[in-house]
Amino acid sequence: MEKKTAIIAVLIVAIVIVGVLAVTLMNDNGNDEDTIYWLVVPPVNQKDQISQGLIDGGVSWEPYCSDSILSGDAHALLWSGDFWPNHPCCVLAVNAGFADENPELVARTIAAHIEATEWILDTIANQTENSENYTKLLQMGSTFSARNTSVVAASLEHMTLLYELNDQLKDYLVNFTKEFISLGQLTNGNATVTDRGYSSVENFIDTFVNDSYMNIAVSGNLTKVDETVGTLSLGYLNGDLHQFARVVASNVTMWEGTEYEGKDLFTQWGVEITSPGAYANGAFVMQGFDTGAIDMGYLGSPPAIVKHLNVNTDNSDIRIVSQVNVEGSAIIVNSDILTIEDLGGKWIGTPGPGSIQHLLLLAFAQAHGFEVKLAAT
Image (cartoon, rainbow, N blue to C red; front, top):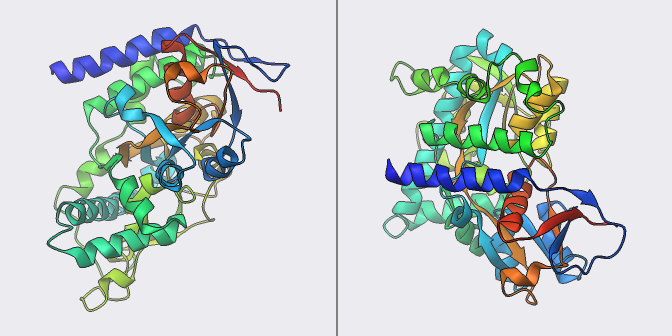
């Protein structure tokens, strides 16, 4: 209880600090020693832009953090877990209407996600005793992320995969939502929450995080089946190893020589998965929900919150039904930046407002006395 209280206290302090942050447009190249300049740079491009001198650093997720570090182009100034211990990042969400109509199908999808997560955790824990599985895991991650296995192995050291829906998740999401309100990221401020039909931020999160499908998945009443129970369209982020469980659950070759040969985990649980393809970031996953292109999706919790509240359509009415990972992001910088004080006047790329990486930059910068402004490009 003391650890949880301390974690939330740190987050609340960050919220109060960030709440006074003004994000404005700069009209010069920016050499202010008390200002950090941000611009949108997708994580996949941050390493190259740092090495080319186009930006001084970036805020990214794995495997792009470890890729930049191992390449020698950057080093980590701050890992997100050092600022927000055990903070939630990616989650698995579902369209509320689809879930109401297909509760068993949603639960079976979660069951596949759980089994994949547990396989990954067991494989990591027993990598010496069962090096064959560990090699398979690294290769799967390498193929998906287009990064080498050394990068994948390093990435796994900086994040924790999980699926449980717990109070710490809800506490963080409450405070993330309040932070978005204070930053002006919600269309009508606090009224956006009530406009969506919630009595308070706490009521919103209690509704937004729905554990009923998880309870079905772990009840022991579901079993693997030979036939297809149903089909759903699943969204996910391109190359994002936070969502490693989806990669494993989609893999067929790991089951060669077993009774499940030719079937991935989703199929084993009776779920036929379709997908419109990988998305660049969580905002685009939410766009996939809004257009009806996907029924479920892996995405960051912050864009899920912001887009759900701001868009306010039936398709954007989603529920978080599983966690995916905690931590696993970092502020990575070039070799000229050795201390926090060196960030003054520097250009830092982020995935954009609404992402947890952008929030990390804002909170960390203001906590150390910096103003954050949008860079003129």
